[in-house]
Image (tube, rainbow, N blue to C red; front, side, top):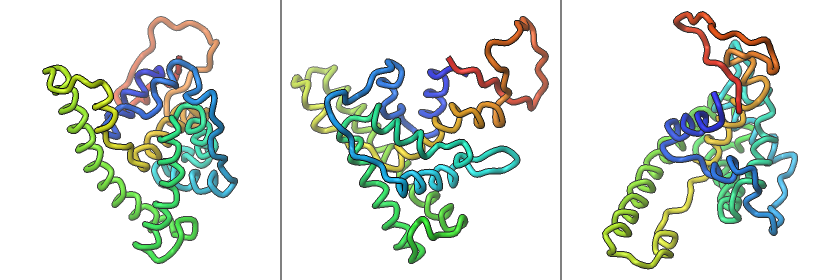
Length: 213
């Protein structure tokens, strides 16, 4: 599985293209002239727990063991626009507020089951939002093609902002399946360089290969 294939998988799982994916593939920072808001150790710990709730430990390592929280901060700083960074930071506060509304406790003090219930509810809300987001973008593109909207700034002005949980979910998935633990434990892993094998037997139920390029 290469990075482009992984991005397609994430798009299928979250309903839209990966936020910051273009900058990721180009290997360039989205904001070379700006200084992003710093993440605290508390933020990283919360991101680890959010990611762990999305990809929990089973017979393989979960997102927390894979260090996904720290990875997410790097992606936000390097691959998000300033507006997207602001949505992400505000989203952590919103998620904590939602946890208090649902369970009367901060996210970090909630039980694993409470966190799971919260993220399931937020995910449903996000899916509905993303669906409207995609519909609005497609409608605007159709108008542009038909010449009804000739100002190229109209699309940007009318586009709906990204949803914070859309960001969190995408980064959790991407971070896990590009980590050493995610590749070696959840996917069939062949170290590179390694010996060449032109034909490899495949049995139903085998894991996908994890080599990333």
